[in-house]
Image (cartoon, rainbow, N blue to C red; front, top):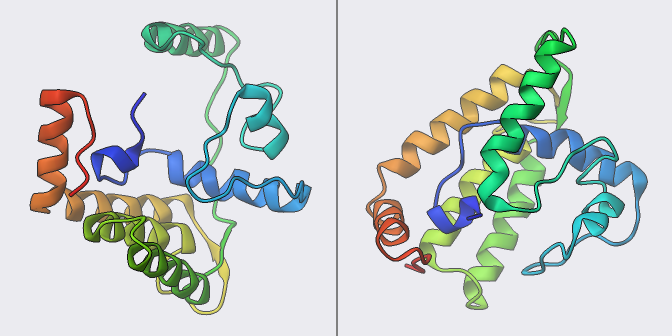
Length: 179
């Protein structure tokens, strides 16, 4: 499966929103095993230990079965009478100070040659979303607020020629373009 970074997009779906919830859980667990820059989570149990997966989370080992597995999960939830809860309004975001720190990290990665200029653009948009935008000080926001930030970043990145080149490259060659 391709990562959002490969496409040069911020995906307009719950991924960053889940990071807010799970990131807070990881911070509370304080395992001391947070993934380092450029590292990958090696296996499912590693992801669970780090707090990115819960014991109840299912895993599709075969990427070709991912959609079918997801459909079965949704149908089972419907059969059990699942109804979505109310949208949350209490998601704590770190605000402008954290955004500045993340942008500094992005800048340092670019200076060290780990990230291209466009990687920096994408990473800065994600930092803005994850920090909660230009809020000062840290405060609680709603899911809708975060979704609005995600949508704004997604639409903005879709208009970038370098993002379009990345999408074209992935569709044609199946390989990410580092531009």
